[in-house]
Image (cartoon, rainbow, N blue to C red):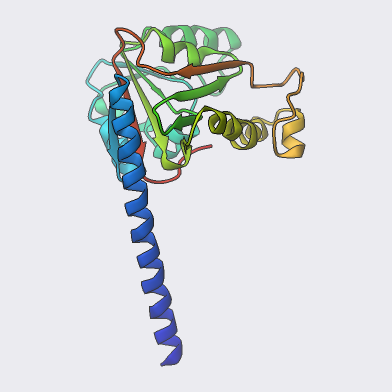
Length: 229
């Protein structure tokens, strides 16, 4: 009986903690959405990744060309495999077995897509989108090109300011992505940026979007759970 009571108490405690965390995430996410709106973006808060995925899929219409910038967040949502089911035409630049020339062609095709999907390395509380790229296709598309852009970010991507955004990139995003991509960079061993000059370095182009680019149709979805790196 004591064991059953202890287990029930633990369940109630975890449920209470989860409720508090959800309330905190919602308050923070909606505050950042408000900051993004002031900077010209369309910004929406989604309770979790599944809700964020639904918001994306609802906007995909038959015949729409959809491209992406390579995102662990979007991969976690399972959005890519559901685009065709909405009638969309998915431009998959990372398809296994394609040549380097075909990959490059698909990346360039993505710049003119009807919808471009991306994650982000960090979002400041004031509404700055901060990213770093190795090739540059993602940051280029976020700045100009596609008819519409949707950036999805988990609550874990929110940081206080620009300095914190770059710290997050150096201590979380870059080392984890370098490890995932099996790069021979010092951060893979050290666990944080070493400001290296390695040939495999993926941190090459840095971008801060402070205001919505002129004329862009740009939406940011913040999900109330941790997603991606």
